[in-house]
Amino acid sequence: SPDITLELQIIPFASKQRLLICRDVSAIEKTEVMRRDFIANVSHELRTPLTVIGGFLETIGDMQGEISPDIQPYFDMMQSQTTRMRRIIEDLLTLSRLENNVTLKDEADIAMPAILNLLLKDAQALSQGQHTVRLHLETEVNIRGSYNELLSALSNLTSNAVRYTPAKGCIDIYWQLRGEEAVFTVQDTGIGIESHHLPRLTERFYRVDSGRSRDTGGTGLGLSIVKHILHHHQASLQIESEPGQGSRFIIVFPAQRVLPA
Ligand code: ADP
Image 1 (cartoon, rainbow, N blue to C red):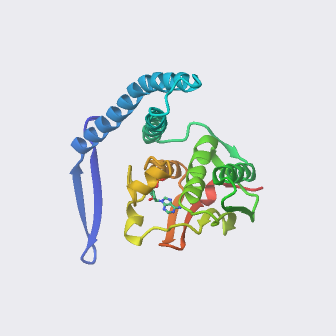
Image 2 (cartoon, protein in one colour; image 1 turned 90 degrees about the vertical axis):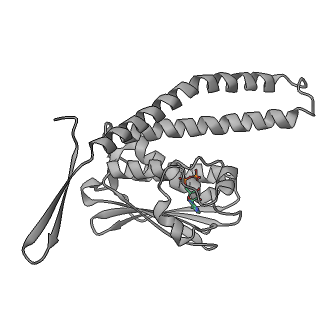
Image 3 (cartoon, protein in one colour; image 1 turned 30 degrees about the horizontal axis):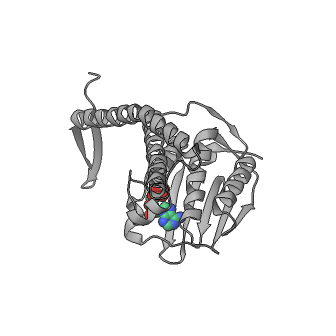
């Protein structure tokens, strides 16, 4: 029946025996679908009123001299919080779109050196000259995948590197070939992450320090977006970090996704 989802697990035990476990996960699956639909619908509904509020705030902001100095700080707060809420809603919509797309819809040959140079420029712009940002193009291989998804995943990692690295730090982006696999690495000399947080970093809204992340303009959804995009590309994510020393985010693209330069 299409309404029933079964999960099968084979566990070897004793020498030639196997244990077959069959679980009915239909109820879990149904709740998961309801959760996804609910988030997608709520995000979609919140978008319009927020656009209207943002639009009027912009109009008021353009009325030079009309806002009294006493009110200005409250007005600025309303504008920045509206921008923040808009970012969260956009990320939620992206996430629910990604959760529903099991396969890539816009697969193409992606020129990686071009994407990487774009990432370098964006990271330099975000850093506003406060960091040293470098690109090490050690290979020119390309990737078969979705341009928008790849750009979004890689730029999430490079912008995190800038946002979680204090001024004067370094951000190094590498593109390398390791055997038949292609490896993207972004390494920073930033605040780092304690090891017990690492396994949970790609969960929705998971943050090491919510106060600090909020200050850096994050939504807590970036790494879950990255995780879904990498899953679509059969790529894996490794995170290495040392508190106070820096972090390294490594993406490994499998041989079947790698195209010659
Ligand atoms: P956010 O929008 O809060 O940055 P992410 O999903 O992108 O959310 O990241 C989750 C958390 O992982 C962040 O809140 C931050 O605590 C931590 N993190 C991500 N990248 C880095 C990094 N390069 N250095 C230190 N911490 C990081």
